[in-house]
Every structure is written in structure tokens, then in C-alpha cells.
Image (cartoon, rainbow, N blue to C red):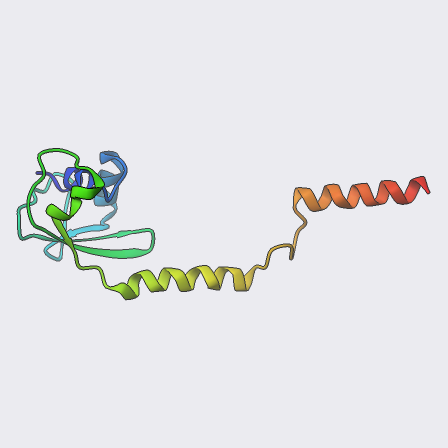
Length: 125
């Protein structure tokens, strides 16, 4: 089975086209070698790919006949992604809020409307 189709079948990418684009960008590796989307995947292969700033590492157990339900994905792959990768994304969420707090900087549309309403009330009095 093609690597882009395999990633789609085990629900790591939403469409095959997204899987193909990831292969073209060099984000997908099979056995530590960057591959094209047409590369065949066999049981025992180790696939690593980057998605949402996380480096996933999975091992192929079996080839699914077609796209499988979320409950059956475990039959076809083993996820060897380290837990630290997911913890780093949590830290990134906190880091983003640290640099830009809500309401600081340029006013939002709601803030602008509130300011306009306040000015209009001041002129009427």
C-alpha cells in the first residue's frame, strides 16, 4: 500500500491529497529515508512524519484493506511518539498567551464599538 494511502487509512491525515503534499514537502520518512507518496509500505516499517509541530513515530503492524474506524486503528499501527512531543505543544500554548494577552494592543471590533458608544454618550450629555 502507498504511504500516503496508509496514513489516510489509519486516520493520521484527513485526505490522501494532504498525505501526498506532506510527502512532497519531505515531512514523511520511512525507515529514516525521505520518501515519495508512491512508496510502498510493508509490515515492520517505521514511519516518522511531522504534523501540527509534532514528530509522530509509528510502526506498521499490518496493512488495512481500506480506511478503518478510529477504534480499529490500533490493529494496524503502534504509536511510538514520545510523550515529550505532546508536552511541548502544551508549553507552546502557554508561551503564546504570555507574549500576547487578550485585550492588549490593537483594539478588537468589539472594543472599537464600545469606544464609539462611550464617545456618543459623552457628546449627548
